[in-house]
Structure formats: structure tokens, C-alpha cells
Length: 331
Image 1 (cartoon, rainbow, N blue to C red):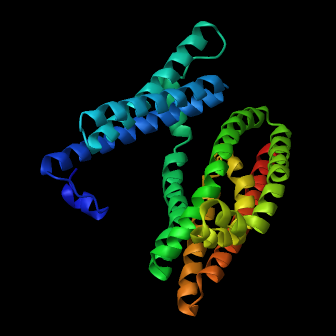
Image 2 (cartoon, rainbow, N blue to C red):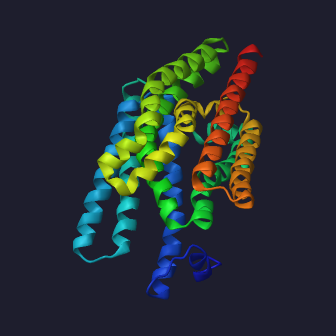
Image 3 (cartoon, rainbow, N blue to C red):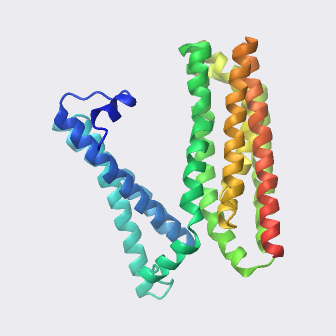
């Protein structure tokens, strides 16, 4: 709040009045706090294998958000209807999570959520999590969004639009499958790690192998047919997006296999390796675009180099996770 309207100007946000700006600045920390609480409850539900309750929380969140936003939209609430709907949707999801926890505790199907003393001990033990994962997460987000920002300055809005559309089309199904697999994997791996045997490594190897076998065929076809498919389905104007997908397919394949496993370093408490990998990837991704500018590469060469760097970094991440897991089970 101390930055006031200057903070909003930094992100090119312009509102009609100072009162609206103050309300938005008050809503931001509330929304962040609610989202943080929901994420905590999500991981606790994963820990206790309450996947049905987790799915129910997502349904409640989406349903309440849509109904509230549509209802407030009829009252001409403007952008505030979107904000209020988003907050109420997350509150509904939190309510579903808490209700599932209480019901399970009464039925003696799962332990209750930890008390304050247990939370305090966990905070002291895992103090490196917020200290290292927050900057690592920031660098991860920058590495993901940097190609869009730099391609806009290098090649202009049209080519950036082709890349953005290609990424959106491929990332949508990938993210849906990846999040679902990752949530189950985190719960299973945490139990395997606690047993201190090699079942954790077997789980990691088995899941990565299945993800690769499931994805290699579709991504091979995508690499061969993407230009034709994009031109046929979306029109000739998007043929270039299919060309970009062709060159990005190797990176997307490795991404599909590795990202569902990406919580492994956190679960084995190697956040230092995680932040080192995130920093290296950010520097290499930025380096690709700065090299493209200095050598005057066209957009195809640039995104082909970006795909190669991304693929190699995700492969390095895979072997880094496996090595950390192997060290953990052997300790």
C-alpha cells in the first residue's frame, strides 16, 4: 500500500478514481492470503489422499466464481465483480477442504490437520522452504514468461502472437494432465520417502517411464503434422504457429514428463539444488534471445534454439531430481 497508485502504474493498471485504486490495493493482499491458505489445504488433502475432496474444492471454486461474476455482472459492477467472484470462489474451495478434514476426522479415516505446536516445529525444520522456494519460484515464472516479453521486442506483435497461441494450445492439455498426475505423485512419494526404502526411486522411475510412453507418440505426430493441423483447424493465418510447435515439440515432450515430478527436490529438502537449476535456466533462456538479437536470427532459428535449451535444461532437471532421490533413499 505504501507505493499507492505508483505500484499500479508499474503494471500498466489504470482505474477511474483514487478510491478504486485503494480498494484494489486492499484486495490484493486479501486475495494472496486466501490463495496461500487454499494451497496449504490442497497439499494437506494430497497428504491424506482426499482426492475426491480436492476435486470437489475445484468444482466449488469454479462454480461459485462463475455464478458470482455473472450475477454481479448483471448489476454493472465492472471489474469488481470479477475480483469478488474470484475471492468467493476460493473461499468456497477452502470451505470444502475444511469440511472434508472434519468429516474424515470424525470417521477416523485420517488424522486431523496438525495443531499449532506441530506447525511451529515444522516451520523451524523447513525454514529453507520459504527462503529458497520463493526466489526459485520467481525465477521459474520469469523463465516461462521471458520468451513472450523478449520476442515482442525482437520480432513484433505478430510473431509473438503466433508463439503465444502455439504455447496456449499445447500447454492447456499438458497442464491439465500434469497437475492431476503431480498431485497424486506428491502424496505417494512423501509416503515412500518416509519409509526410507527404494520404493520412492521405483515410483519416480515408473511414473517418468509411463509419462514418456504416453506422450512420445502424440508429440511425434505433432512435430510432423502441426503446421498442417494449425492451418486446417484455425485457418491459414495460424500456419506459422504450427511451425513453431514443430520446433518446440522436443522441449514440450520433456516438459510433459518432467514437470509432474518437479516437487521431488522439495520433498527431499534440496531447495538449494532447485534454486540453482532455476537460476541457470533463466540465464540460458535470456541468453538465447540476447544471442538471437546480436546475430540477427529470424524467429524460427530463435525458437529452435530456445527449444533446444529448454529440452536440455529439463533433462538436467530430471537427472538432478533422480540423483537427489537416490541420495535420500541411500542415507
